[in-house]
Image (cartoon, rainbow, N blue to C red; front, side):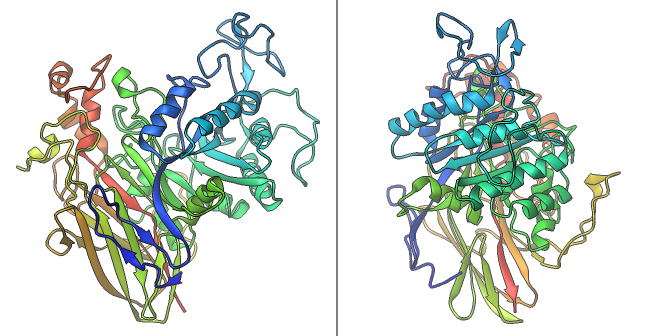
Length: 562
């Protein structure tokens, strides 16, 4: 919280970006991605190609791929192929797949991936590239992790994978000295939910002992019905500086039901967003109502691009995390960790907006940004300020025909030129711990909060200029401690198969089954924008569905009534 935080706000054009200048430091919201794959694991593209694609859309990213073991390197070559590796480089217990010996990920992360990351940093010196791992979490499914080791090596992420990845059953390093005090020699701690908590504690100790920095961000958390609110509480208690949030907007946005299947908790995604984040008063809001700063992030989870029959967009092509990063920081990698930890970030699909500044100001002129807490007196009037930009140029959609979802209600809007319809402000009272999860029916759990949409902003009550810059100012009385967050979309309320009468997103299965599954691939292929190259048209209906239904989500601002 800072007084006079926003000193200048430039009303932007395409050439002159919307800038935020702080009284304390200069910063900017920079687009990034937590979670992506290459041929090192189960991705479909070489590591170098993934770095090139990242560079096309992003300013920072983490290479986070599965733990366990694989039989190929980042170019798809077999580790035991003597024409590529004259001396077999594989360490540890022998395990085979497809007739080839596999390398354990603890080794490839340390000895091969990290040198590739350093090479990519040299190739793209203006970008920030982070060493990560998609952990196969004991007792759960997956988690995007990242480690910034201050000595410039990757021994820490290697040790973490060896100890805590449930798919790593190598025993060759048992008994080796560990990096951190209090955790003993290396061994396997990768069986159950308690071991997952131990892994978070290890990451927190990495930071506390000055070895490096880290984050642990559970991925596609509804997909396998394993994560409940108690797990997130336990993780935050075990690692308050590293358990910073979850991927509420999953990748795989060109899968048939967007993100994950209808068999997932909640019945799949809602506007491409998981049940926990999309439902007003759901799990994410419940954690905020407890006063916990647990943030919502988006990722590509890129494995194989849609143009080749995969279920994914390139990192940043469709979904982006915009994180507020100190652009004057000497240590750029640390600045990304600090920025994501702060919660001063927001997520967007399809470049629905490309700038957002969201603050709350008290009577003394002190302002809080996303992730921050503003202190006020009981009943004090506070002012909500929103500044955003709805771009007046095309996004990355390969289609320019009218949005089929909006055409149902007589709105003509090209898929590659979405228009922000409205923004909801969602608020809830901070009350302390909510009721426990009903494990017999986790979908129907009533968290007992008063979270609700308390204001809606659109072209009837916002100010907009010809360059797409939109300004909102709104006042409210803070009678109790509370949180505020934003969501916005290109869809009005009551769009058949897309939104309900209050404007909430419906399950994506509805639009999939009733609109997009009936589209013919050959006809869609004929409508591709000139220059778009594909090797298969099998995913074009899913691509159209994703670009038809766009949302952004801010992280919360907290108000503490003293």
